[in-house]
View (spheres, chains in turn purple, cyan):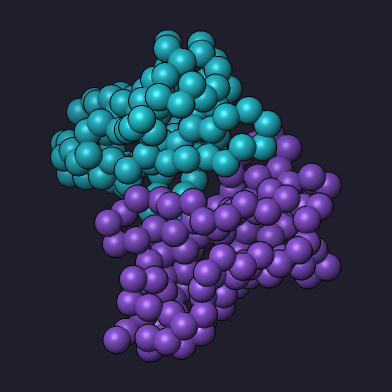
Length: 113
Length: 112
C-alpha cells in the first residue's frame, strides 16, 4: 500500500523566515511520482511540482526548493524568505502504478507579518 | 480554455435527498477523478474513470455513484445524502502516462 505522511499539522512563522515542510512516503513501486500542491484560503488546489523516482536532483524555483531523498523516502519543500501570501495548506502526494494520487493530510502554513 | 470546472460551487442538502455534482474538462483528458477533502485527512479518492464509459472505485466509494457518458464530463451522484457526506468535493483530470492531475475549484456540500 502507498502512504504519504506529513507529520507537521501546522507551522507558524514570521515573514522572511525560511520554513521547511516535511513529506515522507511509502511505496513498493519502483517507478513513482511525487507532487506538491498548494491550497490557498480561496480553496483551489494549485500544482507546484512533480518529481519522478529516478530524478533525485534538487529543484529550485524562485523562493521555493524541493529536496528529494530516496534513501530516506522523503520529499521536503522549503520556502525561503516566507511571505504572507505563502499562507496556505500544502499537500504532498504520491502516484505509483495505477496512476492514482495518494495525498498526505496536509500542513497548514501561517506566515505572520 | 477553462480547464476543469465544477457545478455547483456550494449546496445544502437535507438527509436523504439526492443530488448530482458535475465535473467538466476541456483538455481532452482520458482520466478523471473525484475526491473528497475532510479536515486533517487530505484528499481521498472516491471514484475515477480511465476513459469514456468506464468507472472504478477508489478508496471511499460507499454512498456515491458515478457516470462518464461523455469524455469531457464526470458526474458524481449521492442517492441518499447523509451528514457524513458533508465535505468539499474536488474533481481532477489528467492526460496519458504519468501526467499531472489538474483540479477543479471544488464543491462545498453541507448535509443537514
